[in-house]
Length: 215
Image (cartoon, rainbow, N blue to C red; front, side):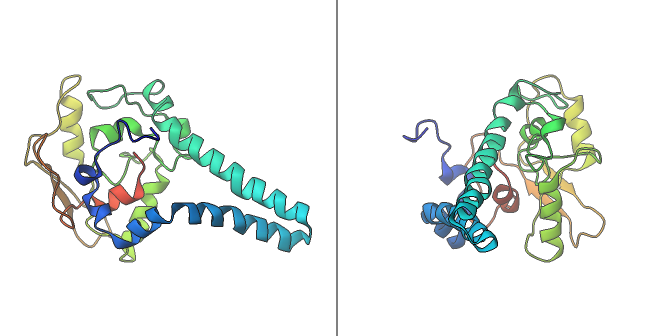
C-alpha cells in the first residue's frame, strides 16, 4: 500500500479533485495538518489546566486516540462491511450494509448501497438508514457550498432490486435523476459505459460525493 501498489488511478476516478487547487494544497501539506491536529489539543489542555501533564493528556485523547479511532472506523468499512451485515442490492462483490456501524462512520457503513450506486452522495437510501454524511452534504447544498448533488431516484433503486444477483450497473447513458423537497434543482448524472474514460474536470456532477466520502 505504501509503495502505491494496487492504488486506484486518480486521473480516472478523481479528476475533479485533482483540478481543485484547495484540495491539492491540503494533500501536499498533509503532515502539517497532522501536526496541527496534535498541537491544538495539546495547547487546549495546557490552557485549561495550566500544566504540561494537562497538555499531554489533551494531545493523547484529542489527538492520538482521535486519529486512531478515525482510522479504525475507516478501515472497518472495507473489512467488516464485506463480511457482516445485509446485502440489499445485488452487486458483483460481497459488500454489505452494517447498521450498527453507520453512525460511527458517518453513514459509510451502508456499504452495499455505495457499491450499488457509487455516484450517490447519500449512502443511506431509506428514511431509516441514518447517514450523517449525507445530512451534512444536504446542509452544504442549502447554503450554496455544494451543488450538482447526485441522488438516486426510488424507481432506479427498485430496478436495481429487481435485477438478478450480481446484476450489472445501469445501462450506459442512463440518467439517474432525483429531487428532494427544499432543494433548488434536480440532480442527475449520466453514467459512462464501463471502461470509458471519466468525465472531464469540472464536468462531473459527482464531485461533491467524492469530496465527502471515503472509498
